[in-house]
Image (cartoon, rainbow, N blue to C red; front, top):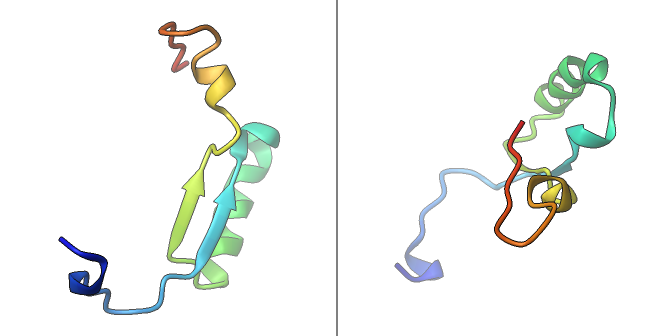
Length: 62
């Protein structure tokens, strides 16, 4: 499918969210604020790959 063939019913509005950089206690508030701001797309964990794969081909998803 080409980009021009992709049909989106609304404008995508969002940004990055990196919960691994914040205490768990603020995550629910983050989600509430994103909802109130009408955020409809989020990239999660952009900077967490080194934690998920600490060494090549070794993964830790906890």
